[in-house]
Image (cartoon, rainbow, N blue to C red; front, side):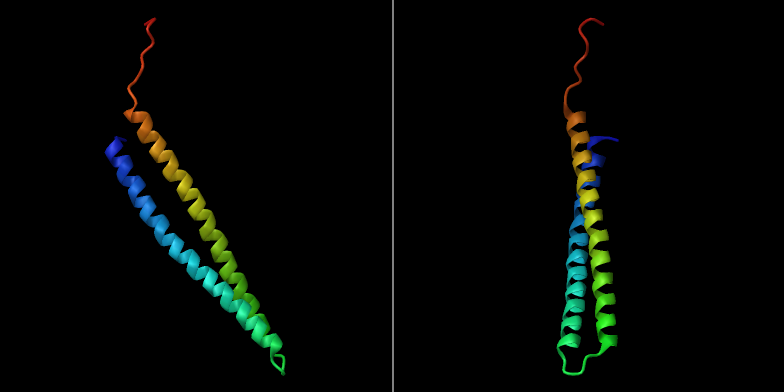
Length: 100
């Protein structure tokens, strides 16, 4: 691939990583809601086990989503670094062996 196509791919992946960052924040918010639900269910005068279970499920779903998206962001950043490194390699002048 030529350098222009690689640069465009890196730009598109950076935009996708930014969108994933928003989804990561949403997953953290969902996890926080699960923690709040657990807290309020346990601190109420009449303990409701179903609200605690629902809170734990919400917490786990938010955490699992956050972990998955976090791994995707990390791998995406590594991929962008590799693309940028490939662009740098293409822009470097090719040194030929003087013995040939």
